[in-house]
Length: 289
Image (cartoon, rainbow, N blue to C red; front, side, top):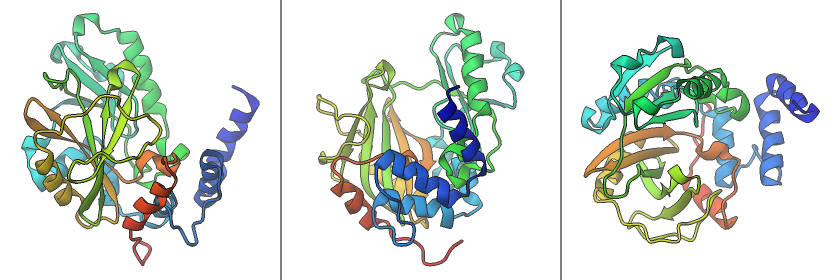
């Protein structure tokens, strides 16, 4: 491990949230983080990390516990079936799992093992990836408070793929006090060439980019776009801001996840004006919870 990384790791363990967030914000966005009078979207999300800490947020970001919440709120038919939940990789009985499934951890993002054919699954690589994810202190690096109390576990889910597109597209709705305002769809994720495309609630393509380029191909409006909007309203009601994600596969809508701190609030928008415009939609709560 290089010296600067060792220093960063040690600092992350001891720095207060406000100082740490200012340091990371300056490093990633090349400008100072104003927590006293936040105006942009990324600034306001960082403010929420410190000032909006409700216990039930920890349920909503837990990839296992959130399923119960969502089923009660909008119906179990929108929840991807869980095949099992375990504390350790060694506890998984792969003989009991179907030929196709997905493994993920409950407390972080990115630690995903997609199995399309169990006979070809590299258990050693799968174990390494899952155990690395289990050991990851997601809160420490992002200071996304809602993840702080989430118990690291492994879940297996039913493998999902849309027959028409050959992938499982993410439709991610930015919601503000129960009102979806903006959505982006993630495509081509399986080929390491991910594309993000932003749309308004009439499915008009918006001139926005963030981290990934726009697709060069036209994206078909999902069959159940209006249903997604309806469900996003129900799930986001009562929250200053939350991103609600859905999948559409073979004519059905499925809940993906709820995210309170999109991209950790450290990834710039292109153009910069959109950071301010989207920030205007986010009305911060007057009182600290």
